[in-house]
Image (cartoon, rainbow, N blue to C red; front, side):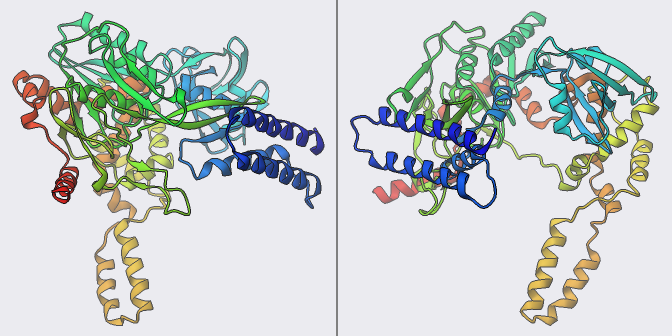
Amino acid sequence: MNSKRLFRRAAGLAAALLALGALTFAGRNDFGLGRNTEILINLMRELSLNYVDEVSPDRLMQQAAAGMTRTLDPYTEFMPEEQMSDFELLTTGKYGGVGSLIRKKGDYVIFAQPYKGSPADRAGIRIGDRIVRIDGQEARGMTIEQVSALLKGSPGTKVKLTVERLLGGEQQELTLRRERIAIPSVPYYGYVADGIGYIQHSDFTEGSYDELRAALEALQREGELRGLILDYRSNGGGILQEAVKIVSLFVPKGTEVVSTRGRAKDAGHTFRTESAPVAPNLPLAVLVNGNTASSAEIVAGALQDLDRAVLIGQKTFGKGLVQSTRPLGYNTMVKMTTAKYYMPSGRCIQAIDYSAHEGRGGAKQVPDSLVHAFTTRAGRTVYDGGGITPDLRTEPQYVSRFAMTLYALGFIEDFVDDYMREHAADTIDNRTFSITDADYDRFVAFMQDKEVPYESDTRRVLKSLKTAAGNDRYTELEEEIARLESQLKDDKLTNLATYRGEITDAINSDVVLRHSYVEGVVEHGLTDDREVAEAVRLLDDPAQLARMLSPEVAQPDTEQEAAKDTVQAEEE
């Protein structure tokens, strides 16, 4: 397609948008909209036809759209045609393919995690198997993106693979039929103590409610369910309606869960539960952290506002914005923020004010002076303006950058490849498995010739101090800085000893993954999960649980409480 045809297509899209804008703003004196749209079309025409080098009008349009949305908020974006498949995966959790994560290793792409029950899994593909050929094409040198594009396709179509097995090294010819792959929203559920169930919920794609309800009903069938832990840690959210339906499992029909308010008339809506609850009186504990966001915050916040659950963990992310999609023609869309959502108590937990655009100071945190107090149904105090504060706060557990670096560079997985070759016939207990001291010593030996681009925060600070002292002519500090540098032990070998526990955990998890998929990894992690243990303790003590849900023992956030006191003092 030549540049003139491309321009006509882009200009046609812009003209359609202009016409739509004229209809939408009929009756309003919005001269600026028409003027600026015409300027945009004229600019695109001039660049497309007269710029010294040939340019793509499609690319110009995408860049212009990206520029329009960049200063609004991180959730408003233009989605061109080539991104629509990714958007479908994000909202539905489904795609057409063979069902496996992949990663690059050397010159080849390998299978990194076949999903349980997927075409790849049923074909016997395991983590570490190398992709040698795809439909007759040599895969050596292909990127992850290239391999992914060849593996994906319409459900029912076939793809022929030549795979080199990690265990044994032989090559096999396989023909896989692509299917509609659904990534589970509930990767694991089970009992973590006598009568105490646990459900990990990882996202809010289509069907999340059905999965969570099925897990809850399975726990009810398996034993006497006296309490339930819902794990929303690091759940980034998704579809709002799925959150409303999930809350309906635990509260009476007709209960308000969340309301939305926006500038457009159709942005305002109150969402209530529409079905009778499955577990109306089941004691609940909800686990949250700083990466609990969006629809996950709706579930957690609604259950807190309705005094239906005790929240345990750290303050949540604070995303109180609602996104909607609008078609723009030619299989493109804009995803934009159209409303804010409000909990049953009336609070909005949005933490960042994006209305302060560039030129007016930029986006900023909602200041403590603008934080307001609200009350739950039972009269407990809760606050807006900065995420959800748990009823029982715990300290977050961090993983060192050194351990994360080893994992990101693939060293953990490469070592486990070798480990699995030696232990191919082993069976393991997911909850108790751990490598031995001798195994870890072999990992240290494995790392001897590996380059790890890691520098501790302490060493970076010392280097900055040394540079600053030199620039400021503080020569008397050089000897002291040199002494501190000599005492600092952050070399690779020392770090392998310092962070041994974290690295061992990462190796253990990767071994368990290869035996028992993601659910095995979750089960393995539950054995020493402090927040799960705290939830079990609380659910085992009905009297303490009742006290936690009473106004007398509510634990307000200290910073927000101080801000509230300041505001009250100023008003007095």
